[in-house]
Length: 195
Image (cartoon, rainbow, N blue to C red; front, side):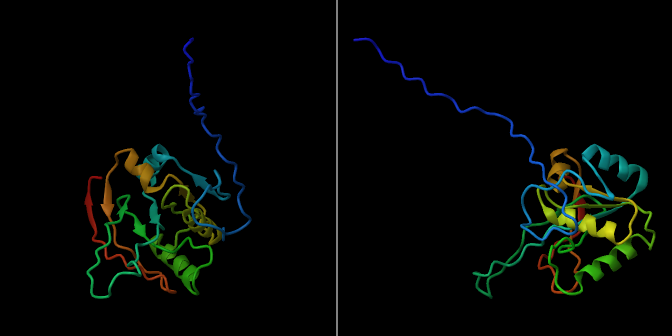
C-alpha cells in the first residue's frame, strides 16, 4: 500500500499594504484607535530620526496627549490603586484629553491657552504632538494646533512606543489637567531615567 503524504500548506505571509486613510476635513470624531492618515495638512509628519534632529536644533514644545489611566470602576472604594507610571519623551508636557474628538466644554480653549503659554505666544515656535501609534488623539491635537494658527506644528505618529523602540531615554510624567472634565487620575511622578 503506497504511503500517502499529507502536505499542509503554510499560510502565505504577505506584508499588508498600508491602508490609505484620507485626512478628514476637520477634527476626527470617530473611533480613537485605528488606521490614521500618513499626512496632516499644515503640519510636518516626523519619524524618530527627524524628531531627534528637531529636538537638537529647535528645542520644540513637546506635547503628549495620551489618555491618563483611570481607576477601574469595579474596584472597592477603600482598595488602594496605584496606576502604572506614564512615560514621556524628556521635556514633554502631558495634556490628556487635548486630542478628544468631542471634548468637554472648555477643553479646546484650555488647550489653546496652554499652547500659548508653552510657546510664550510665539506661533513660530515648533510644537510636536504625539501619543501612541494608530491613535487619532495625537492627530487631532496637532490639527488643533494648526487651526489655532501655529505655523510650525509636527506630528509624531510613532508615539512613545517608537521612541522607546529606538532605545531613547524617557521620563515618568505627571498629567496636567485642561479642565472641562478632563482632570486626569494618574498621579505620576516626574523623574528622568533610561527606558
